[in-house]
Length: 77
Image (cartoon, rainbow, N blue to C red; front, side):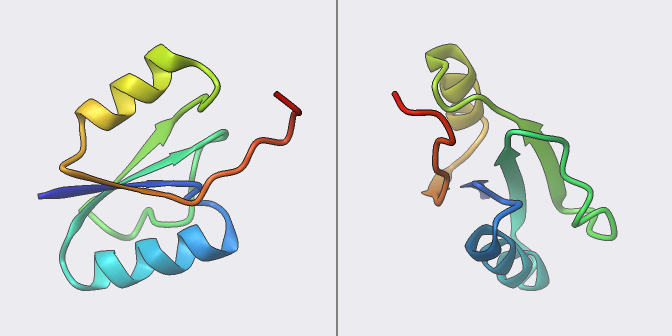
């Protein structure tokens, strides 16, 4: 099982990722920028995503068994 966490560089996202990773769960961290926070975990994969782009979001979701969304937009949509 692989859990995708959107907003993995934010405060809540980092907390969720760390809990999952320490439990041995494979995590894909979705974020706007490259994530260097969890390089010590072999079960973490960084995924650069634009949540306003449907193809980018779809590509992220296809890689995950479960998605946890804790992302926000900096731009007004």
